[in-house]
Image (tube, rainbow, N blue to C red):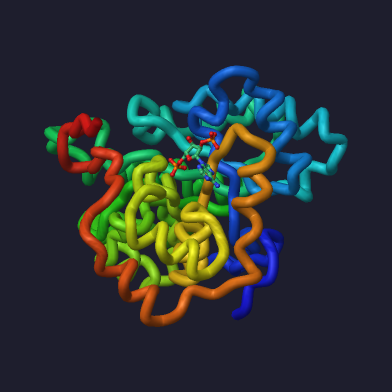
Length: 287
Ligand code: A2P
C-alpha cells in the first residue's frame, strides 16, 4: 500500500485502523507540556503515544480538549509501567490512565516492558496475568486495541502460547543503526504491528556520515531519512520534537522514496545510537 500522508492507516489484526505516523510524548514535555502538545495537534498530529511513566497523560488530555477537535479524530495510546504489572494492577493502571487523560477509552493500550527487572524470574507468569487484564479491558471496550512494548520474540512466544487474544502491536526501539531485524520479522510474520520509539536514534544517528550523505542525495534532512526508513519497513515511527518546524518536517515523508539499495545499506550499517535499554539487561549508560 502506498502511503501519502500521516493520516493514512494500517489495519491492525483486529480490524482497527491506525495512522502510519505518531507523535511521541516522552520528555517532549519538559518545559511547557500542554503548549508543546497543543502545538503538535496544531501542526497536524492526531496519533499520540503516551504512558503512565511519562507523566504526560494529563497534559495530553488537556491539549486534546483545548483543541476542540472531537476525541474520535484522535488515536491515543498509553502504557502500563513496570510497577503496574499483574491482573488487578493492570486494571487499576488503565483506570488511572483514563482518569489522567479524562477520556473514556484508549485506542491502544500496551504493557511497557516485559520484565519489571532483568533478574525477575517469574516474568512469564506476570506477563500472562497482566495480559489477561488487557484482554478483559479490550472486551469491555475500555481499549480498542491491546499490545506490547519492548517485547522481544522470546517474550512474545510466551504470551502467544497462553493468550486468548493475540497482541495487535509491539513498540520497540527502532532506527537506522538499531533496526532489530529479528524482532521486526517475528512480529510482521505474525501480523503484530511494529512501532518505533526513538525513530531518529535520540539524535546520534543524525550525525552518521552515511545518513547525512543520503539526506543530501534525497534533498531531505537526516531525520526524514530515518522516519522514511521506518515507513518503508512498515513500521510506525513515533518521532518527538519540541519545535514547530521539526514537528512539521517530521510529517514531510511522502515526497521521496529511499531506494532498495539504500534501504539495505541502512539495514546493515553498524550499530549506532542505541539508547542503552534492553529488557533482559541492566541499563547501559551511553554518553
Ligand atoms: P527537538 O525537540 O529539539 O526537536 P528520538 O525520538 O529518536 O528519541 O529523538 C528525539 C530528539 O530528536 C528530540 O530531542 C528532538 O529534539 C530531536 N528531533 C526531532 N525531530 C528532529 C528533526 N527533524 N531534526 C533534528 N532533530 C530532531
